[in-house]
Length: 463
Image 1 (cartoon, rainbow, N blue to C red):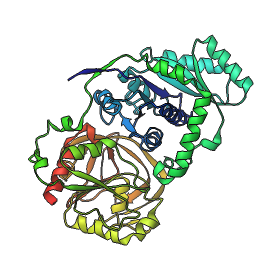
Image 2 (tube, one colour; image 1 turned 90 degrees about the vertical axis):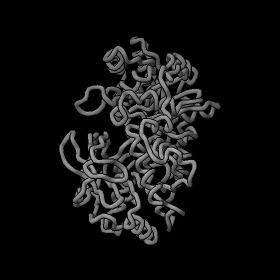
Image 3 (cartoon, rainbow, N blue to C red; image 1 turned 180 degrees about the vertical axis):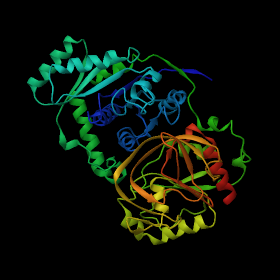
Image 4 (cartoon, rainbow, N blue to C red; image 1 turned 45 degrees about the vertical axis):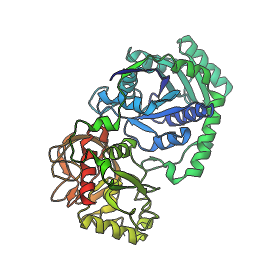
């Protein structure tokens, strides 16, 4: 049933990466939350790390809106699902405002998400090396696509009072409201490494302090009342909110009455080494009749009691290879579970953990492959088709996904590969062995809910 969603909302965008989107978006989320508002945090694109900071700022799951992986038609429904009952929704953009999937026009860009949500855009501009030219820059972004409504600017990394005056004068001439001015404040910057910011799970105490400092900085430098007024100009959004139970209905399954029997336990890897996951995955597994339990491969020496399915998502096992190797009891438990045919879905970090070794350190040995760090960054969207039957996907299942890693695994595919990539290049990748599906490809199960249902069914049979 299509309904009208009345929720104030803003998209926080920038001319390019590195302008301060995450700093401003997270600070705004925290500042508005401190006002007692229920703030719904969202991130355009596939990024896993920023939503962790968003969740810390708001106390709600950070959710991704990815028009490539899930399709433009799911952006508004997934947004409505996350924003239900909230007073304000804030969406952090990805890259530059108009940057999207390579060679696909506006697809998966922040601009496309803003248009699909009918949300006003606030442009975060790194003003550190310009003065009057800021007006030409902002004018270009405001006029490039008339369907994108640029409602104002937040100036970041402003050097002095005089610098601020020049910037404000230029933007006043251009007729663009200045909604905030932030000075350089390196003390609240989050540390980065080879794949971006260090995740919240690895530095929770420091991250809490950083988010609190960001809230202070934004509260002092931004006009929160004006930003809220702009958010309230967003028109009603006519769509049906996504719901995991409804998403599963078109997919018949013998365990539709799963509540009549014990629910299979699906163990999901978490903790500092495995921080990448989409909230909708656990929601879909739960709706499919599973009991989702989190465990930490760095600390837990056994799988959760009754484990009938195992999900090992993305993260940074390369950073924690010695600690993961030292937890031999859990590595042996994972290997035994896989050897017995238990269903295992592993993505990226999970793939590395299932290998024989990672940078010379012993891993689970489920796969006849070895992994190591690389100088080369592998990054980009992929179109894929399942080429081997597995508990996760039937042969022929098509999904769009995302690769993001600085590691390589040799060989790159087993005798039964997981995926055949059809775009942008053609190759096979990953491993299917007994009940294991392991691959570098990150996928969003909301795009194809049947994979969650299929995996829950496999766990029910394994139990």
